[in-house]
Image (cartoon, rainbow, N blue to C red; front, side, top):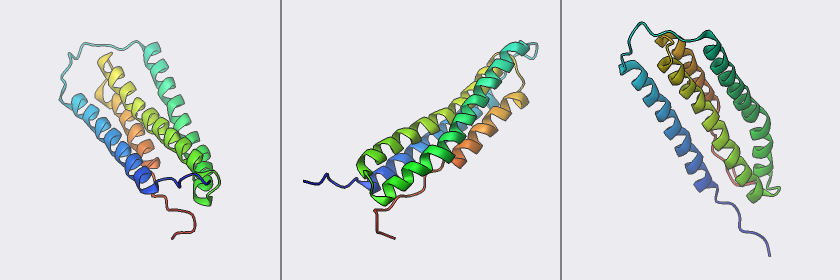
Length: 147
């Protein structure tokens, strides 16, 4: 007995909806940053800023690795029909991790701002998060032999 074929339209809807929700959440973080007025006499410890920047950069590198290394391999397995159900489950997991890591960079920017950085310093985190989310936009999958 053959396993049921994966539900590709449901997969496509799920990952695109999740991508959109996390993109909107990054936009909401930016709105909070733009509307919140904190006292100007705050100062951020340079070591804390460097650590948070390094962690955000590591998350960015992880997103790029997932997007340009693991996701293409799993996409090839799904579209070729080789163990499609298991590959689709792994692909969904990798997309979730990829989106969450990209969103976390914006959260680091928000934390840096709350700890005393300027809006301009925090904006780089948000730009990185938006860029990585744009790179990770999921393309629609089609069943093997279709399209």
